[in-house]
Amino acid sequence: MSEQIKIDIPPQDGRGFWVAKGQTFSVIDPEGQQVADLWAMSISAGEIDWLSTSQTRDITERLFPAPGESFYSVKAKPLLTLVQDNSPCPHDMLFPACNPGLYERAGLYDHPNCRDNMLRALQAADISLPIVPDPVNFFQRSEPQANGKLEVLASNNPPGGNVLLLAETDLYVVVTACSVDFHPTNGGHCTGMALTLGNPKIMVFYLALLPSFIDLSKAGVSEWAILASITLVTLAAIDLSWTFLAHRARVLLQTPKAVRFANRIGAVAMGGAAAAIAARN
Ligand SMILES: [Zn+2]
Image (tube, rainbow, N blue to C red):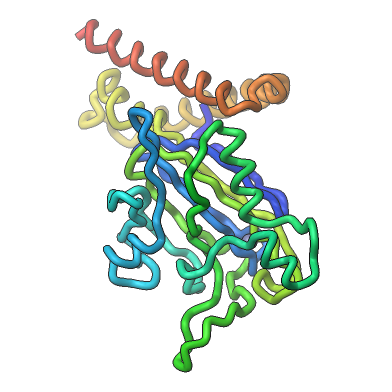
């Protein structure tokens, strides 16, 4: 039971992942100057809704949400909140994803691009959208200039620059590490992206279940020290075991369906533990 899940996105590639309502995740630019495109979709009762940059501009009345503000869907529902912006970049919500036409105009054929990478991630999750929505372009530097120009400058994101986002509903999120290498957008060469996902189950455990075992109001410094030591040793032992098992299970658990199944099993186990404690009291 790791507290964070890490996903690495190779240069000029993309990844899709599910996040639950209340879950946070960070989009991290490990080497700096790399733009990340992001899409988010919510699917409930067979109905699909997706992040709309134009609705977000309309509702926030800004070119880009400020920390604490949300990204909205086509149906004007908040999907993601920008919790922290640990980057000096203005970011962008005016440009489309890079696409085959953009590269062909530059004489580059069969070039990797964010649009195709996003469509592949959707296909892997068995999701179809009627359109390819415009993405949120994190770490992009292309603010409108006084003369009306929209020029894309080299990103000034430092190595490790990142944003922290909160899912306002269950979402499928796609992030791509932008493929533009013929223009300064990504600092002249493309690098990868890293994602870290907070594990909501561990937060539920600490907030809801731990006080059922221990009266935290009566715990002194020595009790807290013991608790912290037990937690550290237990997590280290469990994580090491998981690392070993995950290495073996990696091939088996690569499909999105298998990941969903595993998440459900985890949720049922946690729910069972909660029910058992409730019954005991
Ligand atoms: Zn791109």
